[in-house]
Amino acid sequence: MSDSIMYQEDAYVVLESDREEQFMTAEELKAKLKDYFNSSEIAIPRELTKFDSLDIQIQHLIDNYFELDLGKNKYLQWYVVRLEK
Image (cartoon, rainbow, N blue to C red; front, side, top):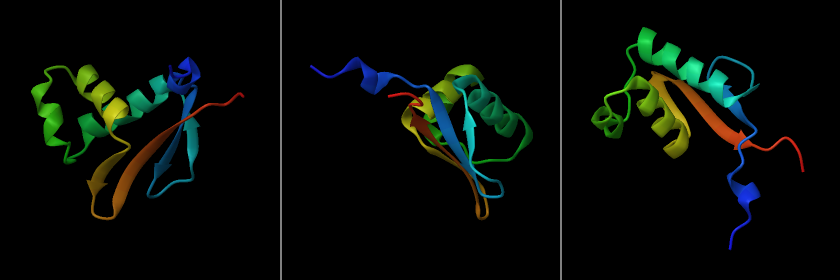
């Protein structure tokens, strides 16, 4: 049986092509992704089009991907981290 601590998500390390790395909560990462979805012409993964709600699309993206292509030489990546032992 796996340890439940493996599924705890304290924060995310977020990397963007034009910024320093940042630590974000899940809510902050969701807000950042919503901003990109609402303000940019980005290529979202085709798999997300089957979801009607933007919130569901973003949650699926966070849970199943680690990178969003933002266009020519731009990216947004996120990795789950635990801040305590």
